[in-house]
Length: 245
Image 1 (tube, one colour):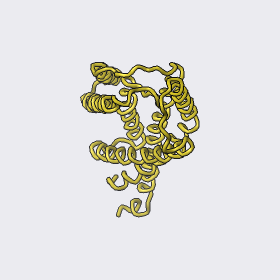
Image 2 (image 1 turned 90 degrees about the horizontal axis):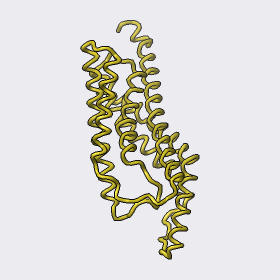
Image 3 (image 1 turned 45 degrees about the vertical axis):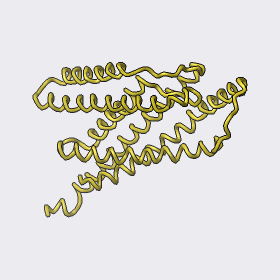
Image 4 (image 1 turned 180 degrees about the horizontal axis):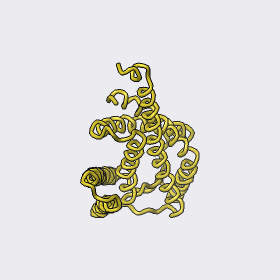
């Protein structure tokens, strides 16, 4: 599989996955976000805090959600296609469907789940604007640490399997590496801002946001894998391939 064809599949799968994830968020997560905005507005009004005028209304923001989710899906799709092509070059015997799903699972684990367990996201109105840079840097650091440990687990998995280590032991060792990565994340500083919003609202927002990201990675992995398997089947049974030319 060439890098160019892998990028094309990544764009197709990523765009579709982003649109699907955005639709999920629009349908389920945005009502929770609307409640958070209403609570924040009511809190500011009760405290006689001047509210800044919205540049874009909520209806426009809802439409923008689909656009931004699709663009994010395209970006993830490009990165996914590049990494997939590199892995496929190193391990040409791997089935496209299996490799795609495993890569998507590793991506979700490294980029979304492990950082979420350390720094779960909050709805608007939670957090001091003065600490935005601090929180963003902590989040990016968490992603970087997670990627290092997940890549290490992936490499160790391949190394141990090539040496004939039994699968249960390989899985146990790799899980230990991921747990060590999670423990390392908790050495990072805590979020500096208290969460004043109702716990039910905050956790509804957090879990729905995580679910939308899980849907994004699952759809990306499945879509890319299906496209790769389809194209591989076409190549295998093409007239040129069948004639041995």
